[in-house]
Image (tube, rainbow, N blue to C red; front, top):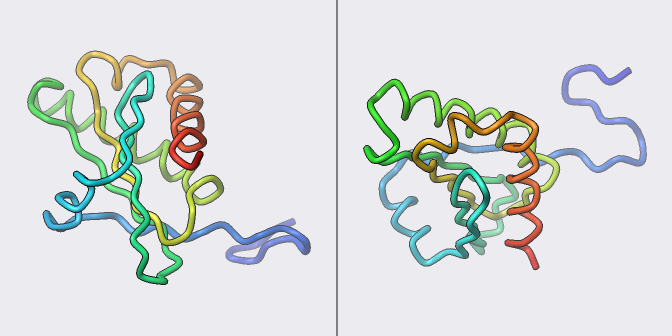
Amino acid sequence: MVVDDQTPEGMASPASLRVLKVRSQFLAMNRAIRVPAGSFLLQARDRGDGDPVVGAGFTCSKKVGNAVARNRAKRRLREAARLTLPQLGRPGWDYVLIGRRDITAARPWPDLLADLRAALVKAHQ
């Protein structure tokens, strides 16, 4: 049984996540790799700073809907990233998930997770 931050022997420890909050971090992502997924757009960028932390940002424009719809979409994206990025994200990379109107909030949960996994694989090819 694994307790707290311990990992079983022979397994790589998952990367820690840091949430992108500053506008300059999001602007830097405009020069990043863009991968359209079924329910969102993924932007991925190697920071090249030697910091092993994985950065994750989330955004939804007003096109997604009112504040309730945007917040619901971002909550779903945050949870998907929390479950997926520590295993599939590369240390030293930043990722931004951009919600899409009528799709991000309505997409079935297993499909949303599969979209993120496929987008990460495609971004790192």
